[in-house]
Image (tube, rainbow, N blue to C red):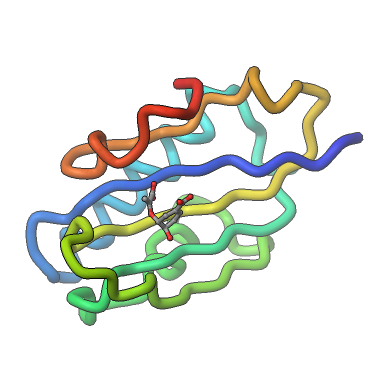
Amino acid sequence: MPVRGLRGATTVLEDTISEVTSKTKELVSKMLEVNGIDKEQLISIIFTATNDVHSMFPATAARELGLGDVPLMCARELDIVGATPLCLRVLMHLETDRGRRELHHVYLHGAKNLRDDLPE
Ligand SMILES: C=C(O[C@@H]1C=C(C(=O)O)C=C[C@H]1O)C(=O)O
């Protein structure tokens, strides 16, 4: 089966464990839900956080969704002047028969304005 990449991003209101947990779970759940993805299709997930996020690893929150056997990785986003603050990003790799254009990338909260060049 072909491997595709799926993007998502959200912002958190503040750098706290409860905010990072709830926003990470919301984003990952929505990415799976709107694309009808079963966890078995997942190959790996990379999370990034802007450098104003210190309270926890988004991967820890994602594991609470039952993704314990999916390889996860967290990294720092580039610290670009003027970039959206308190932002969590996700790049999911999955097996799917769907074409690239059939996948719906998910941008929530303050990250909604990040990209308008990708199909929703
Ligand atoms: C602008 C964004 O963020 C940055 C730019 C990206 C891009 O140009 O594809 C992807 C991730 C980030 O490094 C975004 O998340 O859309």
